[in-house]
Image (cartoon, rainbow, N blue to C red; front, top):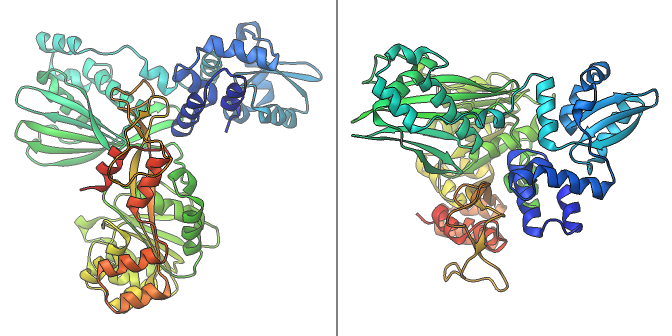
Length: 553
């Protein structure tokens, strides 16, 4: 990660809170330091470039003064240009001149030197100008450029209703309705929403985004255009626009940029006032599946990795819908994914494509469910099996027995705590000796929203949970800021890790109750979700109110 925020802090140009905010948004949005600093309005692009010029004693240049197109074609180092946001400007017999926005990135200079054999000299260009030039060179429009396109107002939509334009207009890609839908999708992508809800009511309809797990209302367009919006979405998904009484499901591919395609699952549901539409957004950009990025601490990573490297056994990940279980499974599979290992997964649906892993989409409507997929896997010489969800006795029975016969099995289960998973398996119908013989590790998890580091403010000490001496508590800003959603920015996981020790095995065989299992697990050092959540509150990562929202039901 760029050293620029820390360098600016050391030079007394930005404060510690601004450093934290910059690093957070760089990590959350996978953007460079200069873009993050200007996006947060910490400094203007011009001020930032002038400041860096003085700090690094580098001149500021105009790209118009150079024939960079010919230079780039001659070198053929496109990957370095994109990777380091650095543009070759001029070649002499012994020297290469490159334009950069972040001069703290010394690796760029080294790699250009290695690839060309030339001495590298750097000059400065404003980050926005540099990004625009690189995108123009390689024929790619950024998401931000599209997002900042002309906004379609409710007044324009009302004008469309007044003019009563023909229904055929919805079939045109450049129609007002089409551009309005594109605008909504782009805004959702910009806010990192996972879902878009279009909801009709008696004399109005609203659009809501699910951001960081919560629904946020964004617009209330004129109700009379709703049917046109629905029809256009159904046309894009190749659904039957005349069928309004039955639910339908489909898919839309949305080209955000040349290298960034959004895959959208669409679901329609007939309601009293019309069809409700929900769009699930799936970005094709590489998802960071590193355990540290997901919020596992060093001890938790060690426990998870040790369980993954056992030759057989069952690893269960539990929690409610939307708690990040699938990402934890994918992270584990990524660690195991080697040429010498045969990995097969049964999923509903396949959420992220993992190269080198045999991913199977189950189809219950044709009788191909998790149990059927598991049976097929066992005939395919597997080393590792992943089950998207254990829902019934048949699936649980096959999974636990496979975990005892030389296979490593990863699966999810819907329970509120790790010890509750042991009781759930027994209630499903799995014998206690099979549970004890197969289980290696149970992880119960939740996702809590991170406080925006730029606008979070001090909070009064809560009466519950107990106060921690010396801790400073924070709460979300009531109005939030330009960088966040209602005072929060992104989410982080909290993980309750239950390792199956010999003592716990005996407790399972004795069919102890959940309170007894809880007591033994905590005696052996297991931290509960509540304890782990309190730690996040005391560290200023999240708020007490957010912890209560997630854990108290």
